[in-house]
Length: 192
Image 1 (cartoon, rainbow, N blue to C red):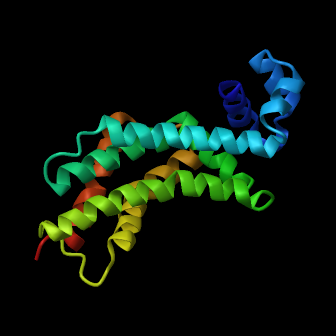
Image 2 (tube, rainbow, N blue to C red):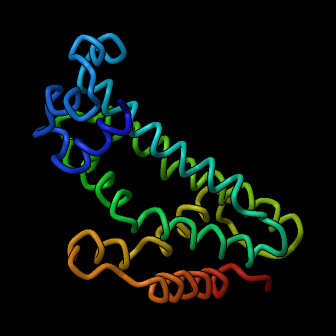
């Protein structure tokens, strides 16, 4: 049911999606949908939480996170771009952003289960790197530096992907962007 709901929401957007569409796509009755999720908002929140959890679990488990901070941040940058610029990642972002004014809790769920968790993971690695003298954040906290890193990684390439969907970046372009973000970050925060 969540797979069907994801597909319907990401294809039609939250407002245009109906529970009839979702129950038909899932092959279940409307009563079954409402037995699990009392409102369309609750169903969409479950879709957001599931999509973000799948990405964050893969981020934690699928990456060795060994080596120096540069290797770890390269893995984290590339992982974000692989997910965030994938059609489903862009669609999820678009839907969450489009509904943020009408349904702020849905946007908050997306932020707290996605970007905020990503930045927390980055901040944990940054704290260890500062202790190991691999980075010098100056007066900036690891949490603040993780937000700067996230902004560098997603920056222009995500904006371009959101607005120019007919020209998705290639794997080589994503890798190049990740490397540019890393170089910029290390010029600012590399060891002095």
